[in-house]
Image (cartoon, rainbow, N blue to C red):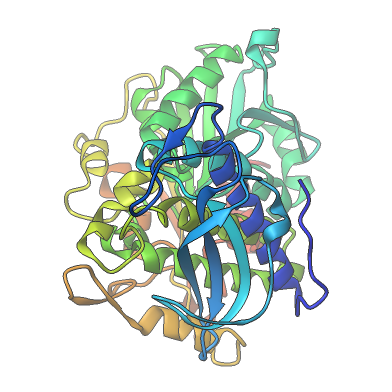
Length: 466
């Protein structure tokens, strides 16, 4: 499938947005393309066959308002031609929709996803975001293809000490090899670890606890001996995957390094913030795109946020009210297990169970835990200061009509609340906290932890690399 980029795309971000939103839109067509899939489109009318023309669908639109803030809109009632072609991504025009007024930066057709097709669509979207799922070896600073245990590929049979990386939402293991210096991986292999690997996994269609089960199975099938020890470096939602895995693993875990991990959940994933969450990710992606030269990982992060948020708009938009301010919006997060598992609410059943017992498993022992946290404060000279200030300070209207800020007090790294990045149960051995220090801002936001030299130095110290 090809994407056509009209000549009037005014900047690199607009082109990136078109590419990633169209890529995610393909998930809706693939999920609804079953040979015998028949269902009723939104509103009255006869059933339509998704195999041919007349497929019920809609448009996902990325709108820039008069203040420069990006917002998503879903326009229902568009009948597509039944083709998953990505050529429908278009640019330009003014749009006045139900939720957004402003300039349309990107508009892409999607197939309407019915309630019984949401899981399939999320799985397809996960495949777009993390295409090489499974255990991937890191050698010479490069990632391998996912291991195929069924084909007899068991590279960990001789492993004695494994360094394992676990990524976050919308992401993949590539962000580690793009962020950390190549010498780090060479030193890790030469001085301490027999093997280094990344666990690439779906982050939307399943919850962190199911990811943890998959991780254990992947290590076992790859031949990791029971006597081997494991050190884990994780980012964002990967911290919850790692925590659940440590609760249930047969292996001995010696060290856990958690960077910007929502160990107590993140306010962005609260049920009534679903629309604002997706809007926020679009703006954060544009901020990242402005700093592409700062890190090779930023394009990967920005692409993930755009495709992930745009894909969720396309999948959830066809469900009546799912992206509106109506009370039914409260249920939208629950439809996405990977987000629901990290929701910072008092009745989060998964997080309550995760921390109900402060003890780790007997096999895992008592790993030393290290935390990387940040309270990001943009400076006024930053060209993104005004947009970020608006995003962080605008009152967001909850489904019950109560005004609430996107993040409560206590700081954040633009994605995760700073107080949520640690937990008394893990009893951190050491913490590196970025933010305002000695009157200067470190400039470390959620996707910049591993680009900072101090993080690399601390990893050498914590992992005991000479």
